[in-house]
Amino acid sequence: MSTRSRPIAATPDQVWSVLADGWLYPLFVVGASRMREVDDDWPAVGSRLHHSVGTWPLLIDDTTEVLEVEPGRRLVLQARGWPAGEATVELTLQETGGSTLVTIKEDATAGPGVLVPKPLRDVQLNLRNAETLQRLAYVVEGRTQ
Image 1: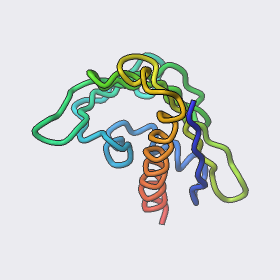
Image 2: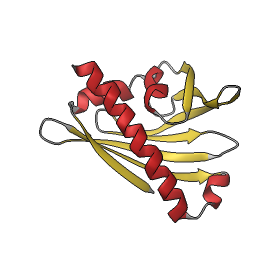
Image 3: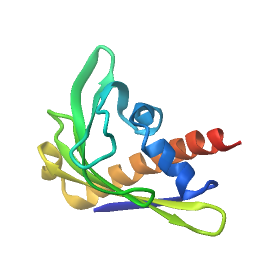
Image 4: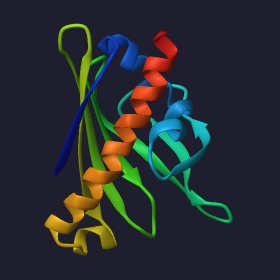
């Protein structure tokens, strides 16, 4: 799995409050363009975000499902964006003296993405997740000021 981390100047609870609000995902997830629906019990195991990926007019409607959750600490998702495929994404939060270290681990699990050699896949995922973490920091830190 590709792994990327970044400190965010906020508490784990403040970061979690953004992750737990599914309507905010298009603000920070690279590629997510709009949210169509969020299951009422998000982020419970089995709940889904109903999102679109891409840019208009080439939007693809798909879902992301929660596989595992430890509220305030860890979230494991199965992200779908067919025909590109699927990926497992793990987000962890670790308090680090006044800030929170957020780590994203991600890898393709189905579809054409698994055919890309892992070293090339990791480069693309690391770049994408660096931007995702930067955007997440903007959202979280903007809400805490």
